[in-house]
Image (tube, helix red, strand yellow):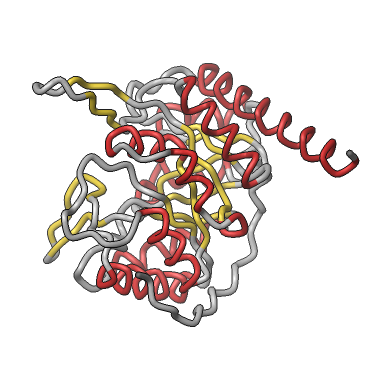
Length: 300
């Protein structure tokens, strides 16, 4: 049972180029030069914050690209669900990138990735308990205050559940948003992957999230593996096109949340840019259809 807590005020947003409610693409290193030089028809780009902390060529490319496109920052290293205090140095470096890039959106993950100053190359699950909820809320509050920017928190993909978890994941995520004022990045592929792995109802997960909190949607492909005992495991590897089942769940999400910025993620086996643009155009067709449906509903 979740106890009642008075919401904390979200931090004021910095000035930025707003992210349009259109389909964008995750910008990865192989496409830096072509994006800078040819300015392809893409509504907006999202980048991983940690890739631009070191300066050099990556940051120079991003400086050039952000003069022509809205940019969203997506972090992977704050370890908001970790039991340790936040790494103050890492948070300061995130703040520096935010100040320089002036992103339209800033997001992180409902996960942990470090313990006792050791960083792991993965986004690890946390138990869904009151203690973990307090920890995540404290870390989100600290992050929003230090960045002077509201963040979006992304639902994880998961492959196991803790026996002592007491709060359904969708309630946990919604409660973090309510207590801290942060938004939610609804990764539809992660919802589908986790639902298949754990026997959840994916549409119920979507329907349980607060409409007003969802500020972005992620779409990606995933891998399917058969375990030795015959079970099927879905793995969020961002290494393929979006599946038909995830497109269908995305359509359901748009009916609930309306048209919100939606991103195509593809991080392994990265294809040529036209392949990503084709995926973004498909997402845009769903966004356009949702807007048309909403207009018809208003005037019906």
